[in-house]
Length: 396
Image 1 (cartoon, helix red, strand yellow):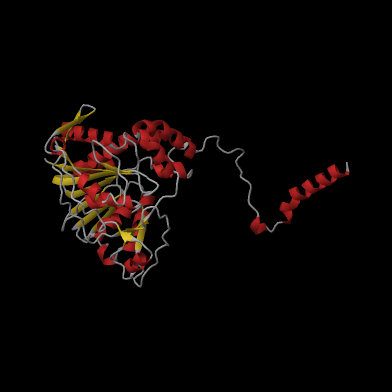
Image 2 (spheres, rainbow, N blue to C red):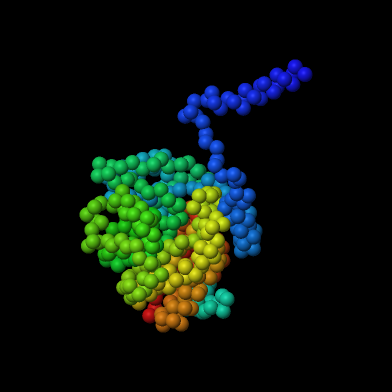
């Protein structure tokens, strides 16, 4: 009996110990009566298990583990900064994946799959271009990564004497669409969904753009984009002579400026698979965003069609996402090619990106046998992505 009384007294003291704890160390109890039974991350993972296990087959278990593991980053070097960042990062074991490419000769490609053929998927004819074995990569874009299997974190970049940061941290695979866009001297370029600004910073590193138009529908995201640009790009290059930043509805861009741009980047909103399985905040699988998620493929299609209209004949359009979803990737491209011809009389061809995947296979893990575009898939040894990209060229 005495033991029971002593135990009750001890429990009472533990229960009241919070009042003895300094206020700065106390943690406020959650106000909500209950936690959500199924948080957005769990809903996302359930959805991906059902969808990607069919789409990716035997690849899905390893991709799933990588998605749920810590991602790798790359440091996009800011060539406008005066700090000796490159030497410092190389001394820590980093390498520039853009210059450290696979020099082995590209295997002979099946001519029937790339030379002016009409491939078909879901009854939508797709014309494919010849494979460009001599892909031009801007020598001024540099992105450093740690070796395969090394998940060392980069330290935050510091400003130089001009208050410009030395590098921009991002998923290194997201630089690939910018490289594949093949910016040439004097090109007029449109980034239709530009915020938060990583790809815009990468494009400006080429120092070849004649005029760059950056757009994002969200005003708050556009403000963030401006802040990023001022942290990386000299003020004299951010004048109205070189750059324009807008917050227009991207789906209407074909009505604003059509047949204008040499290069168009359409990096559309998507389910952002890695964020969806890792973070509950701002998660598109939240129950109050079901309608928004279901409308994504239609929004993506409208944005891509607007980008196609904005490009000039002979111009090139890069469509990219950060999802594994076939519905948001290949299906959107197929529909856009069909509708561009049917509704606007625009004939497109798909540019073969296999030379790009061959060059960078030492750094990234690419999905095999996609009938349209290329995709970096997460892998524990090289935990970048997912990044999907498909390049289109306007023939008319």
